[in-house]
Length: 78
Image (cartoon, rainbow, N blue to C red; front, side):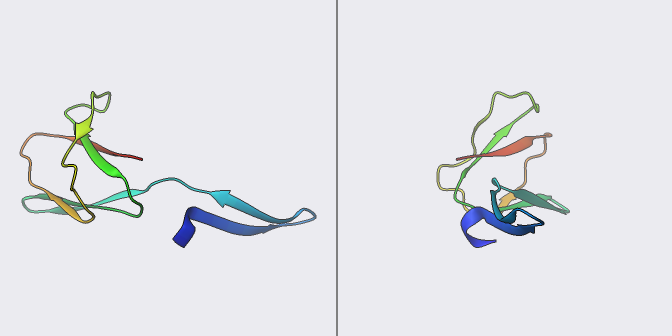
């Protein structure tokens, strides 16, 4: 949803607004994967989930095609 907020009707309490964070999706391809995200953020990768993470490219935009042969973990940094 645009704006990063979800609105809901909370019975007996009125309307509530919730903020949600960045979302990173991936679609597998024969040569790797295509990563897409919903907000402005910097794509980062690491060889393990625990890190350390580093920026993939300062200019990486959604969608981004990853063709790395080695396993990688990805995250978004605001």
